[in-house]
Image (tube, rainbow, N blue to C red; front, side, top):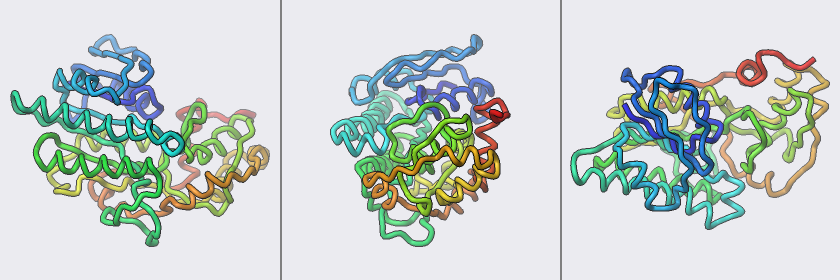
Length: 329
């Protein structure tokens, strides 16, 4: 089995790569080749037994998609995206990467299938940003899509394309609407949702963090470990049960910022909580207020997708996976 991961240098891409390398199999088949690409060349994993290629690419270039599909990979994970805050600030860049780059990939697959049959599994990372207010108490898969950001609009269009190309038999697509991934390791990025991670990540290692919204702000979360599980399950599942509805709300945890902070207090104490500095930002607050807050993921749960049930669990996963299992004294 040959696999391509687009966006492999990002946090979720790196963790997905590690999981696949450690397993050596996907969907019960041996992984023979792994191609890792991103705008910055991904690091080469230590796996001499696998045929691994790393490349720096720009998926906004139409010729890149043709090159990636030329070897007819069996599974394609599409994780690459300009994140929400940056897509809002740079309109052209957001559409070039999040929309044009995605369609180039779909078209390259369709063209490859003209010479001989070809229908790869295509796992598309979408977002809960495809939904817009007014919201019901819980948003189900069938809720109408009225995104209030450019990023959400780009992802919603990608979902429609995924469904149509799957319907026509050009590819076998699964769209997973990721919750906000928390706690993200590493340095903050330009995502408007980044503070959800930083108000936990930085205090856990004794650093100050900025909170730009009120503690009443509520959002939908899952850990990086859960995100990798979503991706692998989407690549392995029986897609005949999806029918025409190819995109699903992933399971997650609905929590307020205040609930996040109280979980931090239970795990790391008042000293860690004191490192959170309130610094209101109107633009961020407005964007967050326009996001959905709770979801009905019963369809995904019935299909075998799983996530955490509490922020205490999410923090514990971060401590184990990123901090060696121990907090700084």
